[in-house]
Length: 173
Image 1: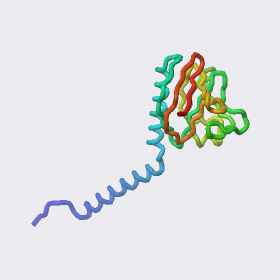
Image 2 (image 1 turned 180 degrees about the horizontal axis):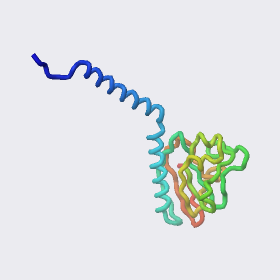
Image 3 (image 1 turned 120 degrees about the vertical axis):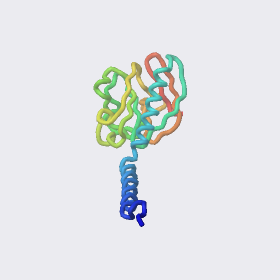
Image 4 (image 1 turned 120 degrees about the horizontal axis):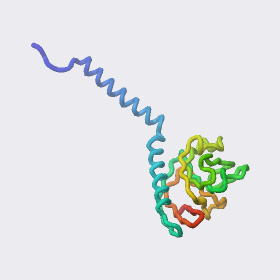
């Protein structure tokens, strides 16, 4: 009698192959956990940029943002090519010495989402692994003792945006 069906060896092979695919997928996600968090952070960053672009001069608004533990958000003034003093300063809960603005943004204000790990070792973290958007405004935080808009990693909450003629004041709420 001829039985129809899959041989046991083939069935075992398929089960092992499926197990290996699931295992490799899990290992990949464990080794690269930042991909989804980075995408979420970039989505919030892009929404912030859109909110600032749509905000009229002498108007203000509140917007929400979420920054993963892998990034910090930094505001640059038009006239400065870097933030920091050259000496270690605690600014917005993060010790900074100097953070360079990308060269193509010279003379422009900018918001940059920069790699936190690189910031600890490189003044060029925003250039090497960063996402920046340029503005014709200085980007400040009037409530930060440094005056620099600096949003530390792992922040999820609201920002108050106040657009003036020459600057945009961004404050954590």
